[in-house]
Length: 114
Image 1 (cartoon, rainbow, N blue to C red):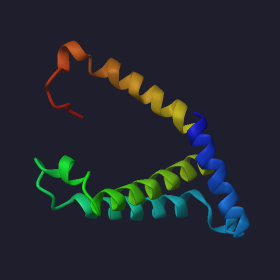
Image 2: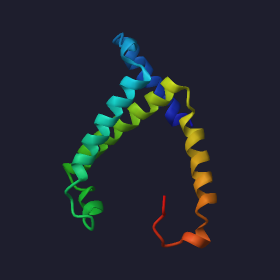
Image 3: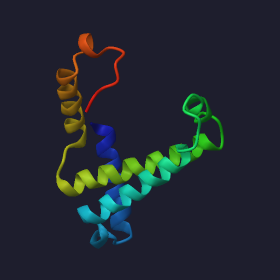
Image 4: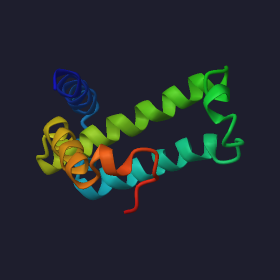
């Protein structure tokens, strides 16, 4: 997936320019990712569920969500890079496996059970 490769390469360049490679190990990147997911969750946690979609499109929340989602994506791509995972390929394989596990004709309109 070229978009993920572009993000990975931009992050690698950003890190190299600052000589931060020594801080880029799977554990450190994963902990940074968890922190960013927490910041994203904080933006949505107290919104009424039935209004969250509409409210997320209004400013300034929309911009804040985009910023935090971007942080999450960059760290996730970085974690995949650290672990040698082709994130695009893995995500597509996971969707295919989930489709087999939860056939549409059997699960349409029913919340998935783990």
